Length: 467
Image (cartoon, rainbow, N blue to C red):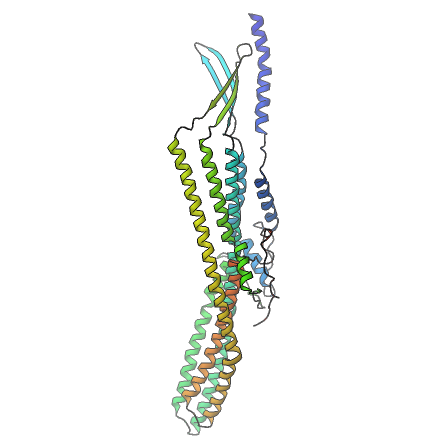
C-alpha cells in the first residue's frame, strides 16, 4: 500500500507538469485566419500607411494649394477619425468571430471528512460545423460596410472643405464688386452735384445718390460680417477646434476638375459611390447573418478530460452536446434574418434611385448655371456696362433723369452679383458631383484603390485663377 502511495506521489509532479504544458499550449494558440480576414487586415494596413491620426500635417498658408487643405481636413476631422477606428474595430472582430471559445480549466473534488479525490481537467467547446465560418463571413461583411462608411466620411469632409472654401472666395468677390459700385455711386453723386451747381437738376438727385451709397455701404457691412460664420464653417470643416488659430485662405482660386460626361459619370457613380457600396455590403451582411441563423439548428459540442490526482492514474473523459430543440426560436431567427435581408435590399434600391435622381438634378443645375454664366458674361454684363455709360452721358447732357441713371447702375450691379452667384453655384455643384455622387477621391486621400471595373472619368486639367 505504501508502495502504491509512493508511486502516486511520484506521478503527481509529472501530471501537474503535463497539465501546465497543456495550459501554456492553449494560451499560446492562434487560429487560422480566413481569406476575408487576411484581406481586411491587408486593406487596413494599406490605409494606415497613408492615414494615421497625429501624423505630420501638410502646411496651411496662403501659398498652399487647395489639396493641402483637403489632406489636412481628412487627417484631422474627428468624423473621419471615428469612422476609421470603427472600421479598424470591425476588422478585429472578424478574428473574434472565427475563433473557438476559450478552453475551460475544471476541477472536481470529493470531500467527506477529508479531501479524498481531486480531479483537474480541461474542457473545450466546439461550435457546430460551419458556425464559425458563417460568423466570420458576417463579421467580414460588416467590416466591408464599415470601410465604405469611412470612405463616405472622407469624401463628405472633402466636400465640406470645398463648399466653405468656395463660399468664402465668392463672398470676397461680392464685396469687391459692391465696393466698385460704391465708388461708381460716389462718382454719380459728384456728377449730380455738378449738374445742381449749374442749375440743371435739384438737390434731390444728390440725395438719391447718397441714399444709394448708404444702402450699398450697409450691404457691404453685412457681407463683411457674414465672413465670420463662413470662416468658422471653413475652420470646422478642417477639423480645427475653438482654441486653434484661424487658417489662412489659399491665395489662388482652384476650380474642381471634372469632365462632365453624363452617361460615363453616372456609370462611375454606380460603380464607386461609397454609400451604394456600403449598402451593398449591408446586403452581404444580411445574407451572412441568414447563414448564421440557419446554423442555429446545428448542435454545439464540448469535450474534455479529467485526471484523478490522489489515486493511481485514472482519467475521466467528458463530452456534451447542445440540443437545439426550440424550433420556434430557430424559425424566428431565420425569419428575422430574411426580413433584415429584404430591408437591406430595399434600402439599396432606394439609394440607387436617390443617386439617379440626385445626379439628374445636379447635372441639370450645372448646365443651368453654365448657361446663366455664359449669358451674364458674354451678353448681359457688357450690355449693362454700355447702358450705364450711355445713361451717364445722357444725364450729363440733360437728356435723361437721375432715376434712369440709377436704374442702369443697379442693373449692372445685379448682373455682376448674379454672375458671382452662378460661379459659386457651379463650383459647389461640381464638387458635389465629383465627391459625394461619383465618389472620385481627392488626390492623396487615404483610400483603397477602386476595384477592377470601377473606372473613373478622366479629370479635366485643373483650373486655376479667377474664372
